[in-house]
Image (tube, rainbow, N blue to C red; front, side, top):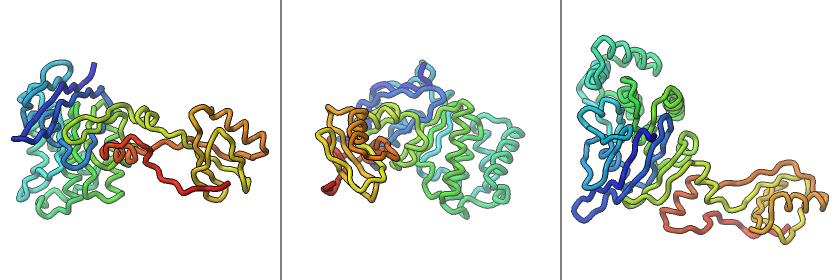
Length: 310
């Protein structure tokens, strides 16, 4: 059974359809990517899932039953894209206070905050004020306050915004650890390279509507273009009826098979023509290629090649 199920959610503002009939489900222990360009409706959707907004139509189910914001919110950790911290409050006191709001007794809240501050090397920040933090430091604090009460569902809206590569990797490693420990994570972003590294499953929304969902590997297979990287020690390779050469860089060739030719047939042809094959890999489209293609409303190939003569 899905931990979270979204059924035909709709949210309208005057004439704008911020979320227009979106449905999806999130499995327990998965890392789920919610993708879309700026203004696609991602944040509105997350706010309905967390009970901040009520949908105009549709339902949100948690563990198979209707979501009850007053009680179920304690099971959720939500990190908004905008910094949601009290600027004048000391960092340590604020983290403890937010942990108590999530149901932790004060002594346990203090212990959990100290544990996470040590893990993220934030011990010296305890008496600093939020207004004195850089954007990256603020992101680390927001992440800590989102997860320290050990929620079963963690929602992260652009969690890497403002972080340098070292701290981005630190947060990424913690996301993997939390998922491995049993937390379910919804990760909202427009950064496709992060999604490919982190997520098991994705949904892509544009202009409030769902235009794609599925497992990351399945989606990439769905949009593949029969492209392969061939590495040889040959100066030339024969062009046969089964494939075309799209690009060349030294002894590396990008080739495209036609629909009637199998990989085995193509490799057999090359070997028969005394081509010494040193490497051979399928080229799958990146999520960024797929994202741009779908948002632009085109199903055609996104790759552009220069003509090559073997």
